Length: 209
Image (cartoon, rainbow, N blue to C red; front, side, top):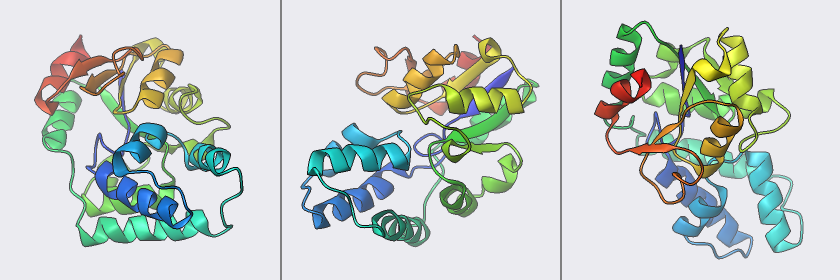
């Protein structure tokens, strides 16, 4: 059995920080989205997909250095805050691994971002060698490619995998991959095929089914 963790918002409490930086970057380009609107439209998607969505709304291309500058600002925000792990996540991972269940990470974020976010929170060394990024597959979430890649790499069948997600694209990707997806409560997640929970203490029991 394998538990696949998303990174941002599941392992590290990064969504408010990263989406605040994203919203500010978009405002500089003339797209006046609030933090909430930015999260609703873009959270859980690969950067490539986010750029395509934004350029579609703007009806023009973003500057060539837009992503590079925004990602540099995001990583600096992680260091400055500093970024924290999601409450209870280390204890939940301990309990899951004590059951003999394998764990890994599959994130829409790139390795450079995860090296900082997981490094600042002390989680990189815990998952090193079992970290997968959408940069390794052709299609990011909501397509199943990333989760299937993680399962194959970890030598597990999709039906024997549980995905812990916090976004609708992630839940849809897990469902498309034939995997279960417990999730901390958020609008539309249930409709996307996730089953909901609101405390990491509940996760080990949910994983066991």
